Figure (cartoon, rainbow, N blue to C red):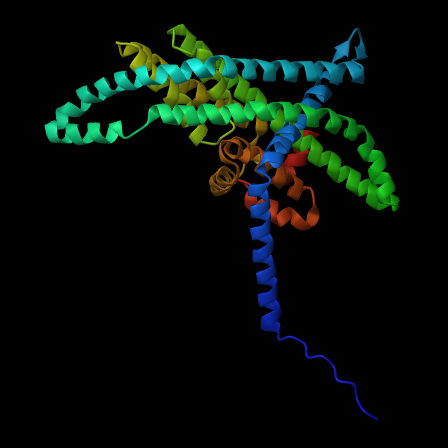
Length: 364
């Protein structure tokens, strides 16, 4: 009787190569999709973070007592939506009203900065001074300002798309538990999935809510310092300090350096410059190293390497918007992974101290 030939099985080493080949292709396609679909994914990601902030604010308001009773859910949702929308409108109005004035002031600042550099660099000799001035003239500060303002304009245009996404996300939240029950017939499995979703949602809400709160405190504190010396466009620099606080390390440095340079070129004296430099630096240090760790705890901190890696990756993929959302997105990913048992080792490697179990305890 004739035996049927069996297909040859691939060697184990070829199986391994196939896996890595598929992994590289998958990663390449994922990154390419993030880049090419950025016009859709950036507003969607910002809307998701805004949705988390809204739900966190709503849940906080609903726990308050009004005449001995809890505030109704509809009133809590309306109050949270009003607070967040008013805050966003303030940010948008400040950026849109002062963007043109800041751009027009840059040539004046550039001329003043040139004279300051002339006084400083001339100390080291005429040849070095001439070389430094030649290099300085090649720096197009006005063009840089126009690029930043253009990015802000693109963000403002996407703002309306974000407002379109958020209401549908809020409506979807009510139906999600019913969908999970219908999608997973087994009651025990469905209950576990609901627990994971609730724990993940609570952790993300806590992080985004506290991060937004401390960023607002940073912006208000910086504005108080800058307004005390009469700094030009103090509102714009305060809004940038609020936004830059979402960028780790680098954002705090820029949030202090930018208004300090403006104070240096605006005033003839050095006292306002020192006040802005020391005052804004003290605000950033106090909030970033005392208040924020006290509220968030170490359990939600990313490792320093993961922070830099996330900042580099998301900035390369989505530009300034990616830099602003790099840490919130990465922390949200870590929280999701920490609540799924098979992926907890990855979350431990991403965390700063490896104690991801404290995330759940912090929410209880």
